[in-house]
Image (cartoon, rainbow, N blue to C red):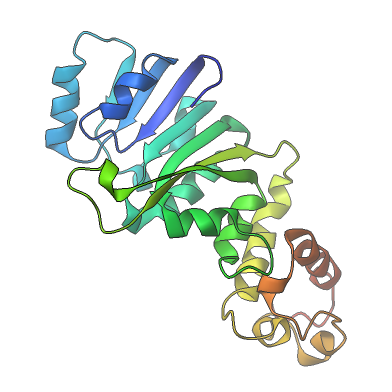
Length: 233
């Protein structure tokens, strides 16, 4: 999780505390977020003598992760809310030291995918525009009891230092439209934002978004953003 000791780690979905125990060896403070009241109670009992553990009984999707300042984040993410949790982690920006998350293997492939690959899509762009993402290792379903129906992988997220926060959300809104229907060309998807005459002059218009790198998408966005014939601000 941390090459050296960490000041503060947020653990998402602490469960019965299997990972919590190891995190407490690495951090001055561990903030364990757990939605299930029974599991939260179990954590209180198990670690009652450890003042470095703070248990937050709450839904991570309604919790302001930025309230604890600069943090590392770890957790076995629930598969059905993986994408929004990843989004909330990355929204920490400069407050995020790093993230180490266990996710479904297919999601790990999307988080780390390169342009032109089958798994490359909006989640890839949304993640990689703000952080370097890397699959550390795969985890077999046999490592869990009971075994889930899917294979998993551990992904490391290390935020970039030079993210333009003011431009980030407008760019991601643009990229989201580019990937709205993956089988459509960039020109057809962008008709939701720009007039046809503007898009006719777009050299990359006949390509699909999945063929374009983040830098190429940024360059297209920069060229189009100030065109007078935009339909919407």
